[in-house]
Length: 234
Image: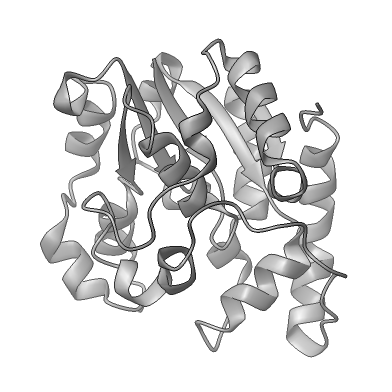
């Protein structure tokens, strides 16, 4: 099985990658299309030059690897993808050979967390519109990170059942520290998850946003709400 897990940034996506990567039957791949996205758009992301130099930047070659042989001859392959990386002209045919899952998180939390890492945030950075459009195009299973944090085992069991694999308790905890599967960008983005040994507990009240962040929330929220209607429950 090849799983394409779609989410925007700051969405529990790295913890989910670690959860699946902690299973003996899974290989994982961290944001395969990030380098092609940066190479094509020229966006000024942290470590952009290093990312393009260290990772495959040809989108066609990346797409071929997504549906090619699984690293380590493992039975299953988990790929952490971001919808906004799939810009016009990038191949999408490979998604038909994957089980597509959409990981979502309330945009107020995403905006607050992402804003701690970058000074300026746009709709294209957090990808809610792109994720809703992608769901409309390819379908798949939706799961909310808030539900996972509130009930990790219950939600991961529900997800495994929905996509047709057995639940593995190894998904619930992992060793602290970086992974050899991390993208080179991990040194900038993964500080918190590298300190973790499992999923954090339920989050508190939604953060209050103002100014441009509040305007961005107003834009993103309808797309989140639309996807939330399809989210898995235990």
